[in-house]
Length: 68
Image 1 (cartoon, rainbow, N blue to C red):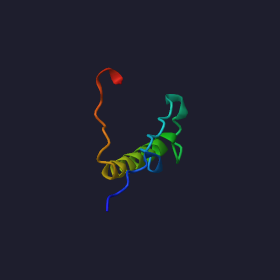
Image 2: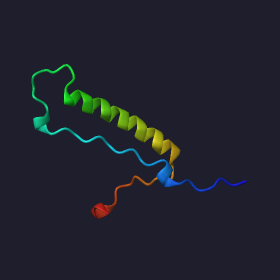
Image 3: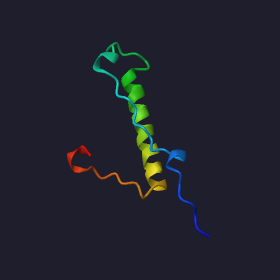
């Protein structure tokens, strides 16, 4: 029995979090700073991406010349 091809839409590649703008942090030492939240989101994204790559070893992450 063969495995049917995966539907890429069923398990999309994780999207990186949007970095806050320099003006998003007020510099007042807030208990929950936007920079702290971004760092947590970035760690979660990297873990999710590693898991996604393990599920999709066929994914080509090689940068192409000219950005194409």
